[in-house]
Length: 559
RNA sequence: GGGCCUAUAGUAUAGCUUGGAUAGUACGCGUGGCUUCGGACCAUGAGACGGGGGUUCAAAUCCUCCUAGGCCCGCCA
Image 1 (tube, chains in turn yellow, brown):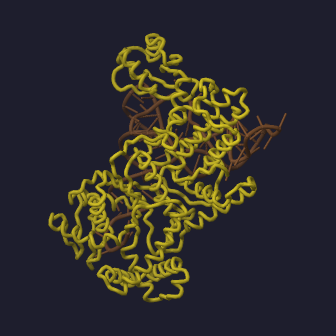
Image 2 (tube, rainbow, N blue to C red):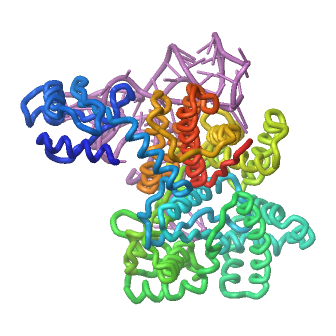
């Protein structure tokens, strides 16, 4: 039953023209849906209040509506609550894990490029944004029927490798490397960056090393392979912990043998030109040119991105390719997408999903300067803190370590995903390690609480319970909140903003807890009411679980 | 110098796409609630739309100028 649609038809019959936009009144007491009459004032040459009153009289009595009243300039519709409750809860019990999905992506393929850490540096907390946004967008697309290709475009090529190779040639120590490869490589990188500031010649040396690597020098290649393998295995360990799986780890190095055709093509199409030894493509307007090849003939990341675009179009035949990459690279993607268009790719399919900077209270993070917070350290501390709380509040809990992991990671993910991705994010331990109020653990707690009630009820939830007994305000408001879930999920993809779902889950949790406090479930005054409330409780539980899952967050049954 | 983004209580933020009723939430602060299903909870109070113009019956929301902050602007990614 779509009440919106039916009310729309009703208004059309009264001679209302154009798109009928129904609002939801700010207070539930005002009604379920509202029709503002302001825009009609000119057409009918009457005051909006009079028009509203008039419409109420004309509409009269309708079977699916409880009543229709004019409140000032608004026509407020009160729907038949039992019918609405019935429709919503039956849908959830029928759909279960798939509640909220609709197959709008069926037959479509989407490539999502996210996380993309750089080899030579450990995963830092600044990778959180791309990783969790990309992951949740991948989950939601899958949920809506898309064929999703999750690509982790590892930064395993480029001048930064020249830096590592050059540094290793100068100060390398194989024993230290083997003892702790990731941290050792990081220390080499940091040291080289510091020296480079004093002696610019080192920059040229690094570029030269990268050129050797790109030209296939066996020694450079051997070291590169070793460095890459060390890092990749630690990356994979972290992703496993985060329960994130990629379909492809094809990074920049993967496309290094696919750049030739791009060079040939830009030359053939005459869109490139040589400038001071570089190969560039001029942009329209005031945009700076896109550099494809440096004067030493080494590739740039723009060229590699173009090769990756060709590979992805050829291999996956995508309907859309999303680049979940920080806002700083906006210009880069404008340029690359523009060149892609000149090369004949449909660049409407390419979209940069940008997000704000992760910053420290005292400024920018900088791997070069060693100002970096490691992802694993944040996870460890979050999990550790959660473990203490569990020890304190629920010492009998089974599987404590696993639950602590789920809740700790849930807190970190949610802390990032709850806000609009476009805003800069100032990292603070307090923010990451907060488990009360508007947080991931609050939503998880609400879910666990619902599970607890269902467990203690010691009876199966009966799907044919009589729902007309659910008349309390908090019951009905929980139902209307649940009703919104499918639209919320779909709207995340409208702007690729997972925080819409996070915010919704907070509101749903608040609404559930209000219901929980107002309405005894197991100890309800009669059997009929208990069965109906158990069903409602189970439906809320299901929606919370589905929603958290889409954000990549676990829903433990106890915590 | 040019371009992109951001600005909402003490703090962190939602609402801006598609203008509409009393600007929502959390932390912190004040008050209250466990003989009832989990207090990682609930109820309640005080507290906010950067500034100026404009459009409109109506602006946090649209336009414009200004201010402040962040990011980017040919051989890093």
